Length: 340
Image (cartoon, rainbow, N blue to C red):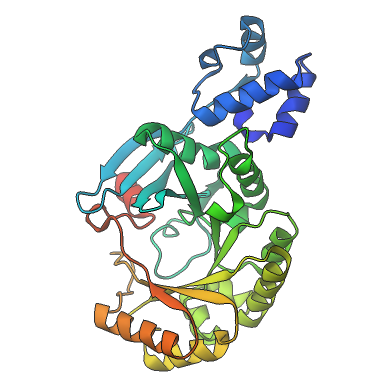
């Protein structure tokens, strides 16, 4: 069964043209999908003939809320969405002074194997289709009753490991006839798949790019992230330079601070040597405890000291404020507990 949410507006127009329908009908249908229609029957301004004609071969489907947790501390909302085949993914809506941001998943599970992450514990199950990626935004927006203006692809999965589906979903998020989210309000987080970063730089989609760096040397990074065995830090940084040159977007580097691993001042000094002089930002994130993992987050004092060292030595850094701490808002934990 074809899911109509997997089409860009251009592709949907071609699809409907094959069924004898005009571009105007495609635009109407595209808008219905973005507004949260859950079936063709919801598309009331389309003719009954068209809806019944498509119904035998095509559908609209939104992820369903399996569980919903709301933080009593800061209002963060965490969703466990169930997909049509019963698989589960996590989505988090965060409230900031500039509006609502959503963190979405791009895969069911993950095969990157990062040693501090709950999302990758059971490996990769499958890629998400475009309608399942953008559908998390649509379903969450429909539930909270407010417009979501910022998107981060930082949930379960490695976005660039699901490249084609992610790019289609991104175009649908940005399309003014759909969700209408500006490129500068979208950020993609990646473990640093060098070849895919270079490919993304040519897509004419100037989204924000966040690199999961987590170590200042290849040796230490390989201990924490198996993907580092294939992609060196030098290669990833070269790809980031190309991305910055082609898009004009400053690259961010995520750095998960783990006690007795990568949070010493000597690591901070090595990170300064690596990044000083670059137009970049370092987002420091104390590791969240995962019961199946051995990593422990660095203390608040240690994290602050690490951040201060970077800033005093010419590398712009901030310490991420942890939202939804009372609902385990970090990725993978809710899905794993539900499966257990």
